[in-house]
Image (cartoon, rainbow, N blue to C red; front, side):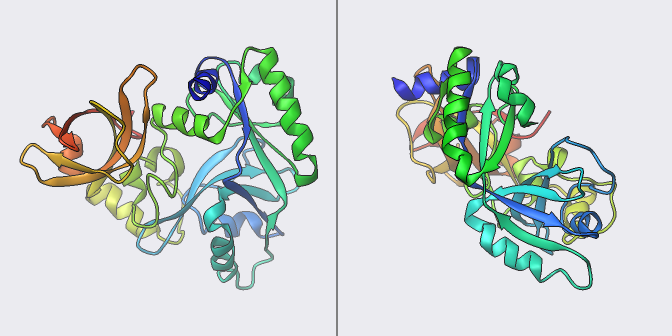
Amino acid sequence: MELERQTRALEDTVGALELTWRRVLRVEGDDARSWLNGVVTQDLREPHGQTLRHALFVDVRGRVLADASVIEHASGAFDLLIPAEVATALLESLDQRIVMEDVELSLSELAVFTAQGPVATSMASASRGIAHDRLGRGGFDLLCPRSEASAWAETLAREAEALGGASISADAYERARIRALRPRFGVDYGPDCYPQEAGLEGSAVSFEKGCYVGQEAVHMLQVRGRPPRRLVGLTIEGALPAPGAEVMDSDGKRVGTLTSVTSDGEGHVLALAMLKRAAAEADDALRVDAREARRIALVGAS
């Protein structure tokens, strides 16, 4: 099966594709660093060179408006890889937060490519990109002008195939993502979620930095409370259910819903599900469409 072959390339060797669902938000100006540090959850006070950092935009209640992969340039400008579906709205919202600061925001016309897998960093193009392990097996992202996208797609495909990998589809990437228990904004979590519910507090939130929009709510939940829900990985018996299917406890009470669903490659169903905290953390039996479901792990938990 072609989909499974491509997924295996990501998991065993390397797979390359364009991330059409990501846009690049450019932040530049003399006050870019201080201003950006005041609107994201990550600590950006000090330069980190070409080290990619993960961050979130949250509202005043601490709910996630978008995720971002932050790339810092020597010029002092930043490129943020953000969800394409909220890019325009996010740009407009952020623009309103610029008061007297010397900051310019724009959605740049750059294509975003990624190569992921155990041998991805052996590709010649890895030196042109920035390290970004999206699936837990190593990899890098590469940005290029939209006019060069076709040429780079061919180059990355050729290099991947030379290492036993492949150019892959978005569907194959999604399958590998779910198998790796990596949540996706707009699918597994979104504006109705706190960072802690999606297990993002360890990778995208700094609890050492100063104020940012929504900080108080995120911090208070971390130190005084517990998230009302948690994203978990599940295995489910039988045929593939649809995302959105209800998850029930042993008493037949609804405790959550499936957010992402795929095959594990061995004839079983693997899913991500947002569950009430008690159900996510307990060992009680769960069911989906009258079939048994078993917890694998809390997403984001070490």
